[in-house]
Structures are given as structure tokens and as C-alpha cells.
Image: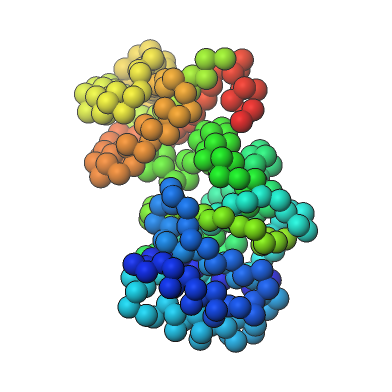
Length: 204
Length: 114
């Protein structure tokens, strides 16, 4: 599956939201929603698109880029990547979250693999995650040369702000990769932490 | 369950550098850590000899009252542009180090039940 996730900063959220929804009207289960309070570098609109293959994206890309090039859009972070979500065919949950991150380019391959394995372990412990996907990025735009997108579907907003944050798998184990005080620190650029409401079968 | 969280720095110092590392850590690092909400529990030196020709292992343990306090500590520390460079500055004294986060065994089940 080919995925495109885009975080849009805009001074005119409603018109841009409407224009993007029109641009992707033919994409099944397209997610184009305002972000919820609490995002960090997450933009005002989150758009997540899934395609059976990248040819399908190329048919939509020009329309999306026309919207994103309007003056009302002040900044865009975007990543395209392949992979399938892990979880049930029709996952429950009312919140979609995407984390954009960049692993430092001097990081050894085995260290990157260890980091990825640690991230992939989180859903086994955080029971408010109903589906998830960890992918290496193929093309990235925005603040950093994003290397990974880690996305999840959560039971609800509390599932993201409560169990995900407060489980020891996060603060006592995985977070060392993001912590400048830890020798394992490899995610040195600011991340994008964005989330929105979801009522489609996204990540199904 | 107390929910107390421990941050443990385990530092293997280069031969002859243990005392300087401990002094520098306590003078330069500890005040800021306290401001971020951490309480210093122990600074242990193994073996308890200031070796000049062999490494020492320094184990420094801090406590925080809860996971929430741990997040508040780290959210204060990460934007601090001096913190990463501080560790880089003492790197010549250090052979290797780890930072781990722990809790009492009796608290593990409750901490995971979130």
C-alpha cells in the first residue's frame, strides 16, 4: 500500500479543508481533518491518504499540490511511504495520530533496526492503540528530511494522552532514542506529533 | 503503589577521572536536575577507591514522584540548549555510560496498568 501523510499549516483552515476534500474526493477512506488541540508541529489540517499503488496517487497529486501552493498555506510537512497497517480489518478508535521523525543520518543500520523494533513493540503494551504502522519514508518535504512515519489509531483522545504517554514502555524504554541526555539519542530534530478525529476505516 | 520513578546514570570513567567526574556532575549538573524536579538519592563509586590507573563505575540515582513528573522533567530539559553540550563536555572523562529508568518491583504491575 502506498501512503501519503501531510500536515498543513494554514491561516484559513475551513476553505483549505474544503478544497483538499474536493481534491481527494475519489480516494477511498481519505482522511482530511482539522488537527486537535495538543499537536506539536502538527499543523492545522492532517491529511492521510492510502492507495493500492503509487500510480493512483499520481492521479491525485496535482490537485492536492494546487491547493497546498495557495498563499493561505504557510507550511507543509509531508511524507510518502509504503506499508500496511497492523490491526483488525475495521479497527475501532476515534483518533488517528501520525509521528514524523528523522533519524540522524550517521546512525548505523543495526541501531536503526533496534530503534524500529522498539517502536514496533509499543502497541503490544499500549492497549489504547487499535491499529498502527511504522514505515520508512520514501519522499519527504518540510522542516526535516523525515525518515520514518509512525502512525496509530487510538481508542479515543484519552487513549493517546493517557496510556500511550504514561505506560513505562514509552517513558522508561523507547523515549531514550529521543532524549538528548541519553547515549542512544538518534532522533535529534524536532518531531511532528499530529492527530485528528477519524470516523472512516482508515488503517483498516 | 508509590509510582516513584528512578533515573539511573551509570558511568564508567576513564582511569583517574572518577573524582573529577563526580565533582563536576555534582557542581554543574545536579543543580539543574533538582530544578527540573529530580531528587538525588545516591552517588555510588565502585570500587570505593579513586583509581588513577583503572576505570571506576559511578552509579547516580535520582527519583521523581511519578511518570507525570518524569515527563515534566524531560520536557523542561529537552529545550535547554546547554544540556546536550554539558554531556558532550564531560565525554573526555567517560569510557561509557547508560541512562536507565526504573521503578520498585512492587510498583511495576500498577505502572503498566494504564
